[in-house]
Image 1 (cartoon, one colour):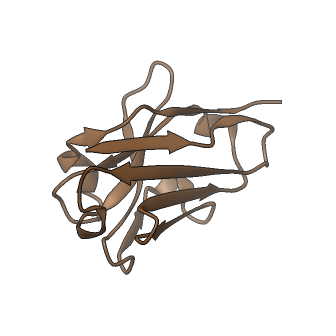
Image 2 (cartoon, one colour):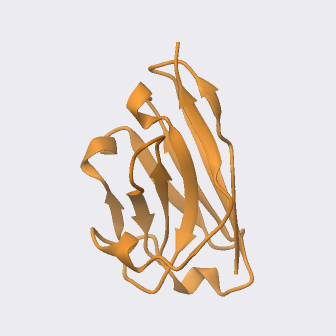
Image 3 (cartoon, helix red, strand yellow):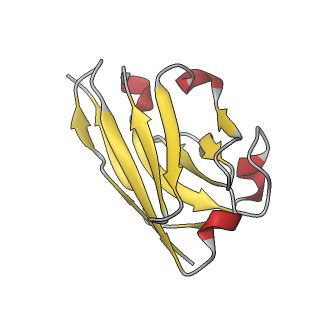
Length: 123
C-alpha cells in the first residue's frame, strides 16, 4: 500500500491550497480514504475522510465550511481543497486509509499512511 501526499506549502492567512493523494498497491476504490494532520507539539487529528463511493464525507468541526474532500477512483487520487486557511491549520498533512467506514471514528482505524506534506499558514 502506498499513499503519497502532495501540494503543501507556505500560504498567507485567508489563502488556499489543494492537497492531492496518489494511492497505489491496493484496491483504493473499496476503502475510505482521508487526511489527518499533526501540528507542532500537538497530537494527530483526523481532518476529513470520504467513502469509497464518495457519498459519505466527514470533516472535523474546525475545518467545516472551509475544506472540501473529493476523490477520483479512476485516477486513484483523493483531493483536499483547503480555503480560508488559518494559522492553526499549520501542520503536516498525511493521506491515510484503513478498514473503518468514513465517519467521526474513521481515524481510529487508520493503518496505512504515507509521507506527509507540510502546510504552513503564516503572514
